[in-house]
Length: 372
Ligand SMILES: *Cc1c(COP(=O)(O)O)cnc(C)c1O
Image 1 (cartoon, protein in one colour):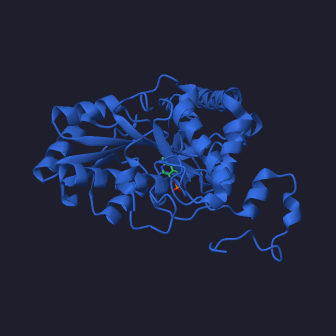
Image 2: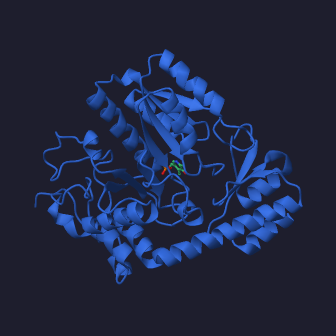
Image 3: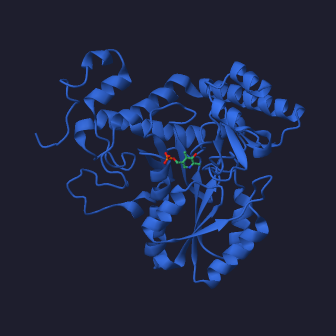
């Protein structure tokens, strides 16, 4: 009687369709997953069973996919990649404020020009300054000299602390940033920094196709990672997996949220538990073998596309291990772009067009595209 939540209105929603379907049943039951359940089990007792399922999904992602030590990461299923990135920036801004007595104006956020626009949104909301690093136009790698100069000029402008967002797959190119290159520059210039990895688009494929990559929790310099389950994994929208080493979530704790059992460490507030259940079902049903098989097959099809483009001497960018191929504009026509639903890097002045190989992008479709 004390909660303003209920199951979905059966006068409007047809409950019988859900019989025997765990996801649809969960949607109709409508559990609220407010808060971060990996921290303590004191959260809202009404939905404790499905909270456990969310904790298990976080554990699988953080430990099995991203190499974290057992029981050493917290996390939650956020509303999207944008929320995950802003949550990370929020945690680190408060970390520098509380640990170093920093002022927000002394905190800079460093990321490449191919990064998600969510970082700019986060900087605006949190009142911290963005510093955008140029990449080389052909190989999309961070320009080392530009980075060195950018850190130097940021320091000259009063920036003493850096939050770094590295990509495991940028949205248009699928390019993956090199943590060693960025850390070396920051360490050389002797500035404290924290690293978040935006694996929004690459997090469920790259660790399977490039298992020795350097952007996991095995890298002690990386504190947090997000990956979106609604992309290659095919979960519903609203399923970004946010993961962070234990000890950091408290920097985003809203102590004043006294009416929420277990308090709230998240940006979103109330959220659907059905989303967490969907992610967990996918992970448990595919299993590590199924995930590996699916991602290798997608990667093989991506390589076949690249080989076919090579044969036709068509320029493109492809990061090994990723399922994204960005093709140079000069080889494209408006007809091909619209027929195959390709996406440009810049809608007003396209230089590249993105193909992203998913389950539904099969050999027949790829062959037709190449032929065209
Ligand atoms: C998809 C994506 C995002 C944004 O995710 P939303 O869920 O749309 O907020 C952020 N970063 C990367 C790299 C992405 O691929």
